[in-house]
Length: 143
Image (cartoon, rainbow, N blue to C red; front, side, top):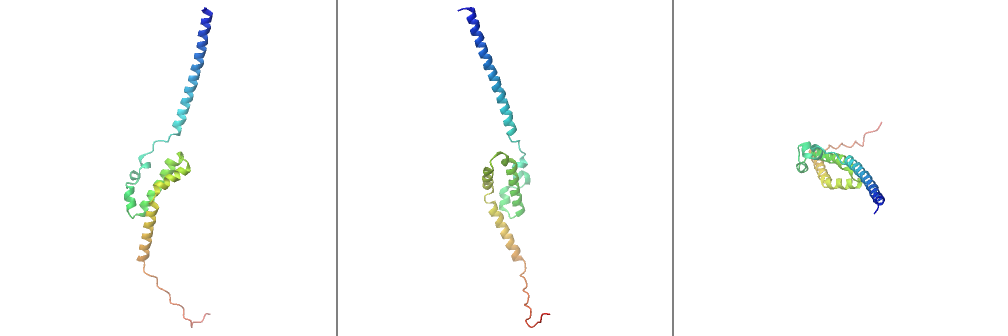
């Protein structure tokens, strides 16, 4: 083999290697760009008060649902709404969010309405009956 042929072959290999290296560098830059994009899409770490009802209120959800305190149940429902809107809604489709919300809220509305009904009838039974008005005398003349 001649030196010129060897030199040409080596130069051809070097050019091919340079092209491969530049392609590798371009792909690495693309990977870095995509990793940065993923990092911006990743949710920030929430505080414990944002995700745990008992840390935010000092009450356990089971205790709230077992009790008769309507305000505590409303605070649990509000907490679930805030949680869903802040930590779920930005990252899932609205149908998925609503399915998750329905799953989390299952049974709570029945408990809430049951307490409201018992409170309504307790108040109704506690109030004295209304005194019926005597009908106007038929002999009175209207002027």
